[in-house]
Length: 94
Image (cartoon, rainbow, N blue to C red; front, side, top):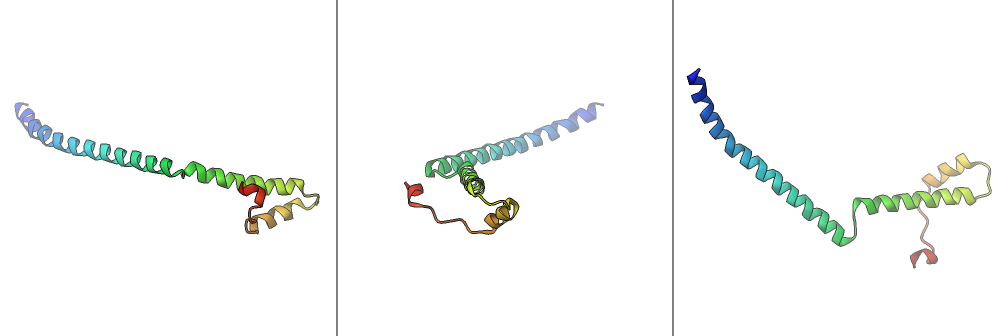
């Protein structure tokens, strides 16, 4: 039994640097992630703004469908999905 305790001491001594290296790496990765998020915020672009633009495009398509007086909505939906996005009007650029 006493031999087992002496075998654990070197194992513990070797595990301390491994834990320190792992912790340092995790801290460095977190710092890099924070810097990346700060750079995105400073430039005004982020994943949420991309998602917002996509949703705005979808709403425009839905508005065109709703305001159209046609009866074949399924065919119109498919046609709008396949059509390239329309150029922005002058009112939308302001």
